[in-house]
Length: 168
Length: 281
Image 1 (cartoon, chains in turn yellow, orange):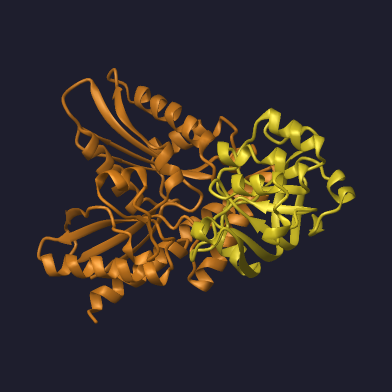
Image 2 (cartoon, each protein chain N blue to C red; image 1 turned 90 degrees about the horizontal axis):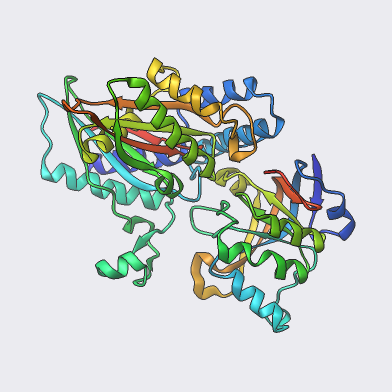
């Protein structure tokens, strides 16, 4: 198992292959279809710093944060998958969710040395591995706001890297 | 506070946070029997999650599901309106204790459909589905609470099958529908819930009963055949390949119509379902 700590370096991501099981430790961001397009817009307008967000080497976990906990939503929802390219361009190194993504998205990830990883929907386990959580931006979206989690050893499997997909 | 309210609340929390022993054993056997390392990893994560959830009495999944109520009533027992009201209050309390994900959509008919009325932040505001009530020979009143998630609801299908006087025709159609559903289900391995009846309502009721009563360790030939055939598609947990796309099939065949048609309800339950627990009231 490969142990990764955020923020991820270019070298650490470049070594990942499809099928690798990794652990993720450190601060990660959460967002899904309601908030990720807003983060992309803020990035394109150069407004991330004003929101207190640094995406360099970051992980985006596609989940809501509710009283029930966290768990991956389908990453191939249009409003989520279309953010892979722009967010990778602005520094995101890992998109974390579930489901098969398109060949085009796999290619775009490779162009930015970024990866897609699948995390099982293990809410109780993830709860035991989440040390802190706070809303970073867009609190009006409630459980779909942009959150930061401090996590210890979340397990995930690399599903798209270097132009390859686990679903091919 | 009424004893019934507390019993129902506890039952709902168990339904949302606990794997039954036959469910744990099904995972252990599948892990031992699976050659695909990635599939083993997924199933071990699901099993580890269940152990943590049970210990913490916390949700198995962040989609905590919609409560569905299956009530069995012995012939010498009676259910009053007051008891049903207390069951509803127990559900409300259980949803707050779990806690359930706030999922109650507010507003009038149109606003609830297009979700423009906003979300009630209270976990307990989520209303359960209508009661399903069945008379039984035992001298008890038994409530089973099932927590049904959204992913399987998207992939479930209730539709007719023309049986051509051959049970294998019906099985093959169930397998075809299930294989497509399982391949699109985000969270597998799954359990296939199947009901066969004379109408859409009856078939769905049979499917609910199958989910309420099914046992991983007691599979009929009908159920085994469906499981085996769907697993031949090699979809695997989370779609990563392997021979355990489906851990079991829970089927209930009801009375049938004298005609060429059977109505089949099918739900590809996710890796945590059927999330259920029972309590005697």
